[in-house]
Structure formats: structure tokens, C-alpha cells
Length: 195
Image (cartoon, rainbow, N blue to C red; front, side, top):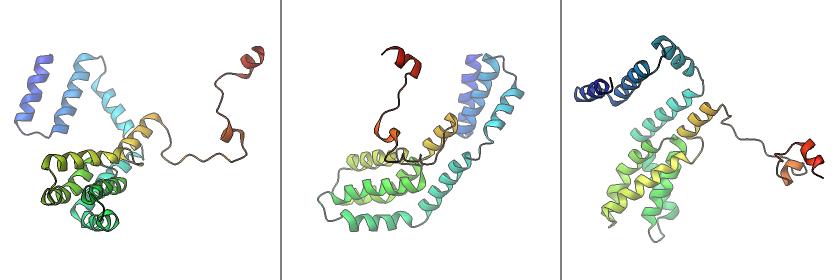
């Protein structure tokens, strides 16, 4: 059965089926053939998982990234970055990192950041005398800053899967005990009997 699935995946990719569909079909076939879960239950679970309103944030992040990539936001951010740090030594490289950080914070997507900023900044870096390998490496690693700047797409998916809030947690008041002491993991009964 495994060989049949592998051959089917290779055949679907050779036919030009989108990779997302190929992976989905392969996963569905593996679940159906290697577990006792009926296909109806699998589709029901997939539908229930898509009922989260927070998943719409991922779609809108992707939409915002596409709009900003096709629009002139990347070029405007480059002008702002050049005005801020363009005069420093290595200012164009610093500008590229700052732009990736800003664009990733707005779009929430690392690939959208690399595409939008990279198409403009990589030729500019190479034209300014930077090594092509350095330029490509700088933009691809700086584009991954989008994962660390909230609210990014991976953070939204993590919050959904863990059932946590995406919003900012409230700060404790200055005079409260939680602001000055760490929470105890030991119950009060065991801590009083140890004294």
C-alpha cells in the first residue's frame, strides 16, 4: 500500500497538480489505509477545525502580504529605511534588515516579506557592491524575522492549536504579589508540613 501511495504522489506531481493538493491527498490516503478512522469522521474533524474565527487572520495576513507586494509599500519602506540608516557604514544592508522587520510585522508572513523586499533589495545590494551570496542570505534570514514579531501567522496557528489568547496579557499591578514574587508550584499543604 505504501508503494501505491508513493507512486500516486509522484504521478500527481508529474501531472502538475498543486503541491498542497498532492500533500492533502497523500495524507488522506495514509489516514484511511493505515488507521481505522472512517473517511466521514476525518472530514467531520476537518470541518470542525475550520470553524475557528481566528483562522481568518491567516487568510487576511496572506491577503495583506499580496496587496503590499503588488503595491508600492515596499518601495516606500525602502525610502524610509534609507532615510533612517542609509548614511551609516553598511547602511543598505541594515536598511534591508529593518525593512524585512517592518514588512514582516505588517504582513505576518515571512515568504511574503522575502518576495516583496527581496525583489527590490537584492538587486540594489548587488549593484552597491555586496556579494550576491551575502545579499541573498541576508534577505532570506532577515525575512524569517516575521515569525518572531507578533502577531505572525505561526503565532496565530499556535494560539489556535493551544487554545490560548492572541491578545496581550494584562500586566500585574506594581504592588501585587505576582509582580514581585514568582508563582509557587507547591501546594500550601505540603509547604506547611515541610516547616
